[in-house]
Structure formats: structure tokens, C-alpha cells
Length: 226
Ligand SMILES: C[S@@+](CC[C@H](N)C(=O)[O-])C[C@H]1O[C@@H](n2cnc3c(N)ncnc32)[C@H](O)[C@@H]1O
Image 1 (cartoon, protein in one colour):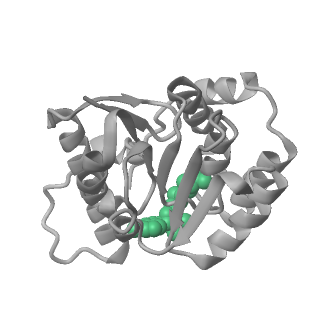
Image 2 (tube, protein in one colour):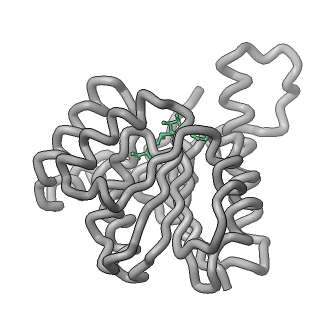
Image 3 (cartoon, protein in one colour):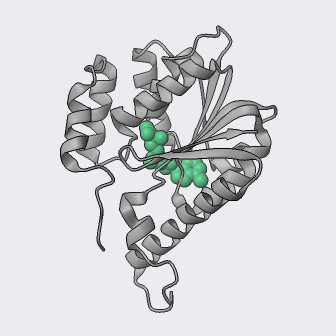
């Protein structure tokens, strides 16, 4: 399967070189992700999340697919309202336990309410509006994430999604293939790419949001609810 670098590798390296060093906890989380080959957003998109929180000064954030807390850590460090909280969600208890240690060491554990389960069900089970919903779950769930998230955002709220260029598969992979006879890995590529492309269509065709995909790392979309 052909993979495209979203950014030219030298430009990516340049951008990684010019950003300041991260604190000890984030540095350790990045090393842990490298060792385990765990897909975190990384510092370039982490900084975008931090900046969007600084810009919008939210009090309620819902994160779908929190892993061991790296993206939530970037957002939590930018919260300014004393009552501001992030509801983190993930299907894995092990990730939640791992996150608890890092978030405590970062002094932000009080900002986080970490729930284990399916994010698409947990959002339904949580009352109220959100200022930001950040989506990083399995890609075949992306269209459902949109349908569940947009009605739950306040007007002017943000729906942010990672991996919207999906290692270039949005252009290299033909989603019109005959799915009969695909092996397990091909089937995964198929359903995840279909999920990313369907979310893209929704983000640009829905009258409820105004969207931009920022081609940093693997592509991050920012949609503002009208
Ligand atoms: C790409 S990782 C998240 C990384 C994290 N956002 C970060 O950058 O630090 C995706 C995570 O979503 C979780 N996940 C996938 N689908 C999910 C779902 N439907 N509900 C809850 N968690 C899900 C996986 O267990 C995994 O930890």
C-alpha cells in the first residue's frame, strides 16, 4: 500500500526542530509512544490543540479516544477557567491507568474525568453542551463521531479530528474497490479510509460547520459549529 508523507520529510523535520522542548512528562510520554508504537498526535498537533484551547477558553471538552493522555495533557495545560474540565474516553482500562500517572505528575489530574468505554456511547450518556469535542477514535467510527458530536457542541464550539489525511490514503487508496476477497489488513485499510473520507464529506457539506483541514503531521481538521 503506497503511503504519502503529508509534509515533505525535511519540512516536517524543520518544524519539529524549531518548536521548544516539551516538559519532562510530555517528553517521557513521547518516548513511551515511540517504544510501544502507540499513535499519539505528537508535538506539532499537540501544539495546535493547546493553541485552540488558548483561543477559545473552554470550560467543557469531550475527548473521544484519549489513549494514555498525551493529547489531553496538551489541552489541559492550556485551560484557564478554574472550573474547566476534560472528559477523556477510551476503550482500554490499561490506557486509562497509564494516563492517570502522567496526568498526576503533570499536576492536571483534577482537570480530567477519564471514562472507560466506547466514546460513541459515553457521549450519549453524558449530559450538557461542550465547547470542544476532539475525535481520535478508530477511523471507521468517524462518521458516527460527527453525527453524535455536532448536536452536542455549543454554537461557536469546535469539532477537531486527527488523521484526516490518513497517511495519504485519502488520495492513494481507491475506496470503490470490490471488497470481496480483501484480506484482513486490506479490509481494515478499506473501512478506515472510507470512514475518513465520509467524515471529510460531512465536514465540508454540512451547513452546520465551517471546516479546514490543516496538513500537519497526518492532517488535523478543525470545524467550527455555526
Ligand atoms: C490514536 S489513539 C489516541 C491517541 C490520543 N488521542 C493522543 O494523541 O494521545 C486512539 C485511541 O482510541 C481508542 N479508541 C478507538 N476507538 C474507540 C472508541 N470507539 N471508543 C473509545 N476509545 C476508542 C483506542 O483504544 C486508542 O487508545
